Image 1 (tube, rainbow, N blue to C red):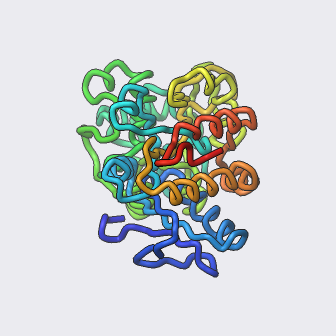
Image 2: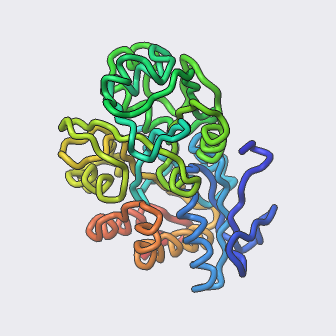
Length: 345
């Protein structure tokens, strides 16, 4: 999805209604494509419930951070959590909405979802370009009984600044010294090989079209596009499939309240059932608000989502935040103020 084709989710009278401009009273947000399927559904439901509109641009985490810093939207969205120092320097607050998983997806004719198993080393070596064919002996050894073809592997990655990329490269940097040294962990990296797609949408489209391709997307995109995902070996040595149970297992020991800015990283967590590439998605807002009324409306939306949006999140295989964490998040909103004090009371 190119910038010119930014998706603006409008809370219209019917599902799937898209518009080019927000109404003056609408809440506006921009950023991560990771939570876009959920925010779109929440937007539709909130419109029906309250009559209030939300327009959300799915342009990637990097774009969302730029737009909130430029004050062109009411909130930014990113899957790469900002550190407390960076938040303070930018005058921003940050809070998570839901958790989910980044999953490797592939296009090998005849291969069913979860049929291919990858160890951390194999995944890193594929994206480093060390393994270039699906019938590489290392892949064949790890997948006895699976018919892997003599076909070139096409790596598909994000072309834009992306929180999904940040989560993915954070994991690879933890499990591969080679990756950490040569590529590193950023929202945008110098990829050793492959082709780039804009947004989770773009990566899903490329992988679907190219035989032999492998990429990484948020799990909802894999399900929506009926893509084959891999199993991954986690820190405990177990091979696991991605789903809300394994995402939840990865978040079981997260210390949200004790982490400044709620900047918890959930990759490569311990636990036999934990999906190794799990992450949260975050909202960014200014502490000092030029338009307090708009900030209040934005927080009303997220308060509604915390109260009434959990079932929708689960249906789309996201993991809701625990109730106690939601209460802590609401308390943190008192940092957000206009001329007459906090916008949330």
